[in-house]
Amino acid sequence: MVTKLENEKRPPRAAESSAGTLTIGVLGVKGGVGASTFTLNLAAQLAAGNDLPVSPGCIILDANLQQPDLALLLNLKPRFSVSDLIPRLNSLSVELLSSCLTESAGVSLLTASDNISEALTVSPDALSQLLGAIKTLKGLPVCLVDLPKTLDKNLLTMLDDLDHLILVMEATVPALAATGKWLSILSDLGIDKDRLTLVLNRSGGKMKDVEKQLLNLTAKRQSHSLFKVVNAYEEAENAAIEGLPLVLRNSRSAYAKSIAAVCRHLAENPVLKEGPCRI
Ligand SMILES: Nc1ncnc2c1ncn2[C@@H]1O[C@H](COP(=O)(O)OP(=O)(O)OP(=O)(O)O)[C@@H](O)[C@H]1O
Ligand SMILES: [Mg+2]
Image (tube, rainbow, N blue to C red):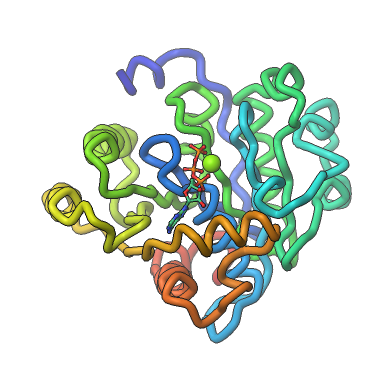
């Protein structure tokens, strides 16, 4: 299936950049596993750079074109969106791109438009050009891309262009099945263990047996790095109501510590160290 989609007309890949921002995609294995919450908190932790071997600064590209949630989680109403940049992609400058970012909690957000008909006109080619432009940004070491979960040309193009991918899972029966499916697809796409980090969200919950099966499933594949992010439902909801990332609300919580461990891993990954921006 992947090969068939890949063989269809794919847009040209964005020109490789030798400097600038490292792009890391975040993909939930299915809806509601916590990918956007994880993206926001990882971004806030990377932006703060507290006690981490990373340069501070992070941008989030909310590429969930049909349902962007990051602005909601940050209590923001951004003036500009990806759709404002589309007509200007051929002359896209760092200044123009920067002027479309909205800042909050140390994180710079570029969101998809909340107007669905505008958002649906964004093509794979446009996304590729946008990612290419983001890679040239100075002063923002990392761009986290909250990815849509539909395996279409937009997602395939972004998977191809991104420097690294984080796959977010949870211990439920549907997510277990979806994880197996995504691991096969990513392997078919040549996204190997050096380009892939696994995150088990809401770890330590009641579904111990499913969690064990999930860990067995991922262990059977290549030895991917896997991180557990603890269950913190009430804190996550309160943080969303306040529009403040959980890691900033309580930087000593078990949740914040699990996110910091992912940051340290990203900073230590040799492939990332040799990437366009050594964090
Ligand atoms: N570690 C966690 N512990 C407990 N609850 C969490 C955790 N992470 C996220 N949540 C909660 O899970 C719900 C879904 O989170 P989120 O919107 O981030 O998921 P998603 O994968 O981005 O969903 P969508 O498919 O809609 O994009 C939210 O209520 C959020 O507060
Ligand atoms: Mg989401």
